[in-house]
Image (tube, rainbow, N blue to C red):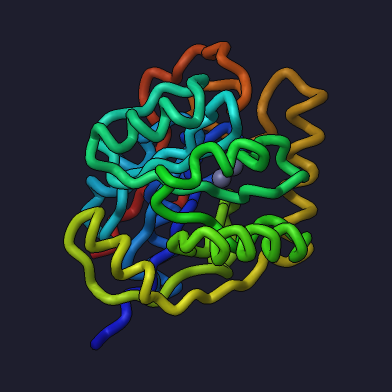
Length: 255
Ligand SMILES: [Zn+2]
Ligand SMILES: [Zn+2]
């Protein structure tokens, strides 16, 4: 059986905190030997759709939804999920589309957007739990997530939570081929999880971006070029660019 290298939880510049276009993400992933990407922009699916429509790689259309209780991931989506609802309502909306509901970085204290306390309320409705987040340098928070997943018999996965151009994807799953959401979940349950973390350079740039966004009226250069929200936590919508801007370095066709 040939294992598919599948990376889950990646952002494009349709998120306010990412600096790479869908095309740049897909091409970089292909160079790394990744076979399947689950792209999950903040409150947005257009970046994932754009990546899928390139036809270069298998792409699962997802969204990292800002619920009232913290971030929730929907995979295999056809329509954008409304942010700002309760975790329960958000899970229902994901399932209504035939999608899967995943809990990313459930105990991360660095990002101020984890489900944490809401988990016991929704555990019976979750499809999978992120037991490792490559963007979180604090391993004991992942250990807590692993313990919760094991105690509740949840399907586990590792999240790349990748935002930046120029860095390899350190966390991914090696899993068999799958057909559709339910089969994906079964394949995920049997997958081998590769749980690496980003290095200091990644954390330094994300830290700079975070401080910049707090202090400056505009995003740091290249970030959020296609995002419609100023901040994932903010319901205020900024003016959307009229046309998505392609990454300049990838205007040349490959073939
Ligand atoms: Zn998140
Ligand atoms: Zn994320």
